[in-house]
Picture 1 (cartoon, helix red, strand yellow):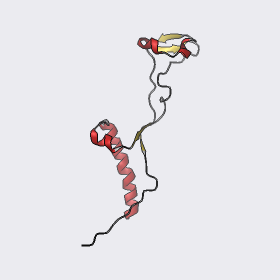
Picture 2: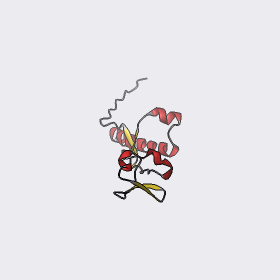
Picture 3: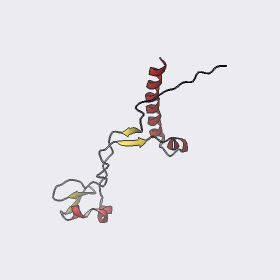
Picture 4: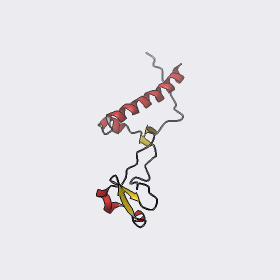
Length: 111
């Protein structure tokens, strides 16, 4: 019996999958008064609705300044899918993205 060997090249292989458009901002609370950065303490801090507010600007003090508002990306790692470290809803989204991405590639290649 003769078997055909297939060779499939994927030119723009994805390395990350976007799980959400942007991450939610987290704010300092009254209980975390000691953890507020010094740059906000020198301007003065007061509390409104349980959240720390900069007295000078009147804006809530954000804890996760670097990640708030940025998309949440998941690096493709089959180990997380296998071991169950990924949340079931996130896993569902990842699998849908995989099926969409690879389905388009196979559809173009074999038709």
